[in-house]
Length: 535
Image (tube, rainbow, N blue to C red; front, side):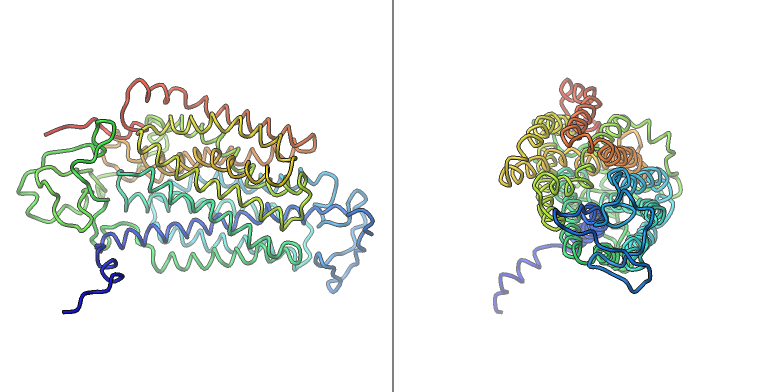
């Protein structure tokens, strides 16, 4: 018999369970990357919506009638636009354009923050696949609708604000759904690393959104929204056709393999270890229990020592209430920390291209491309935060260290970014890593830890609600950051950076108690696991 080719041997070395996990990992990664892809265009297009006339340029005439157009799109006579620059897109061509552009961000993010609290509760009571599919189709439609304002010559601020509000509401279906689905498929082992890599979808989506929007921003900015909207809607169809909510739906094991000798800092990584009668091992596992098995689905190396976590309790386990989720230790602290961490992150997300345009005097397309370096740094920051927190088993301390370093880095960024392109590139990468690291860790690994906290006694219905509470509170900060940036930026970009440094310090302050607890009581992160019990 001929020896199998090396590539085939590599493929068959993975078990059925491992292939399904890899598929769900990749699918949820792409699904949420498409959400972020659709959020990025507004920050790229800002430089085109308000475009001051260059020295020597004549203001472009505006004529009534649908057939009249310029290279900025169809324009009509606006007799009351006495304070406009005539080179932007009304109504964003007036002197108060920072406030108007900030209102667009605020409308989206306030709706997102308010809707997130309800989204987790609703999501726990509906099939994830249907819920997520609806959200993606609706988000694609309203993202494209914003861009249609260009083609249909719409200059009403109300139209753009209402579109942003509805889009913010429907996008809340995404995060609780994908986090719950991924947590169903992966156990607690190396959760920080796995989710740190997975959370790079945020930066990947932002990068793709910047490049796609930047391609059309100077010629036809409407397509900067229509194309991402079509992509999100297409991914919604993919979600409906392929998403598997739980491994038990196809009789896969629920979690990653367990190795008997894996330990860190003298403590075993896997806890809640129980003695299981031999009679239980001979029959099939209870489908309502999550068992840490070997990757190939065979019996554990030591049949009498397997790690058992109660899973879905079926109808016996009711979905957790909002107040019940708040009582989980650590939820309030991490939620408030994320409020300020996300304020910083989303201020960069929505205002960084315009800042680069102002400081480095680049056009909208070049500024959008350069701003992707912040997201490249965010990819490495999220993975680094996951690796460190797994190694130390100290989630709060890892976040605290990165927040402590982020403050001085932001100050340096504001000082050296005017010194040239090289300094701007270096600080974009470093700032992206330190700003995005804590944000990525809290919204993924920490949320999953708290959603499976030992106080829940195995009630898996809590994960979506806990995730929604944490991310919803963070989204309040995400709404405030861009709004404050719009209000403060007319007084100087330095003041915007001072605001961001203050927010960074507040985020660190809310973690002080948890950091002190981790330092005084070495052990698992976020208090999510019980002490190891040897048998």
